[in-house]
Image 1 (tube, rainbow, N blue to C red):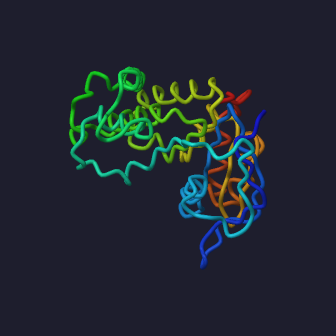
Image 2: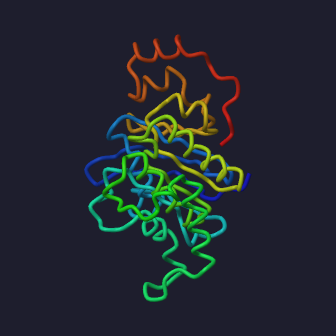
Length: 252
C-alpha cells in the first residue's frame, strides 16, 4: 500500500508532559486507523499533530506525495458552538470554502456536490433548519456532510460516534466504508472497543507514555490493553471471555 504519511521516531507531548515516545508508523491509503487510549493519553493531541497545529517534541512527519492541500477534519462535538447562526446547508458548504470566495459563493457544480453530500449524510430534508435546532445525531450527520465536501485524501474524525444512536452510527460507518473504498485514509479517535474490532484494519493504542501500532488483532490484546491503562484486569477478563474473537477484521 502507498503511505500517505510516514511518522518516524516521534515523541509527542508538552514541555511538562510526555504523552508517548518514539512512535514509527505509516498511515496508508485505503485504511482506517483507530486511535484508542484512556483519558489524557494523547489521542486528540495526536490528531492536532497530524493537522499541523502542534509539533512533535522530536522525530518527523514525512508526506511522500507532499502534504495534502486539504485534510478532512471532524472535531469533538463538545468543541462545536451550536449557537452559531447558520443552517445545515451552510455548515456543509463550509467544507468547500477553498473552492469559492465569500462574495461569489458556490458555483453550480459545488451546489450539486453539496446536495449530494447532504443526501448521503441523511440531512437533505432538514437542509434549511438552523443548527441550534438539531439533535446530537442530526448535527453529527451535518458535520459529516461538511467533511464530505472537503473531498480530502486524509480524514481525521475525533470521536465521530459520540452522542449518536446505533442507526446513525451505522449510517456514518457506511460513509467511512465508501471513503475506504475510494482509497482515502481515515483516522478515528474512538472509545468503543467493539466497533474498532469490527470496522478498522489498524489500531494505535496510547497510554503509559507508550504508543503501540499495528493490525487490530495484534495491538488490542488483553495484556496490552491492561498494560497501557485502557482496561483493568477484571474488565479485560470479562470482555474477552464474553466476546468471541472476530474472524478477520473488516479492512476499512
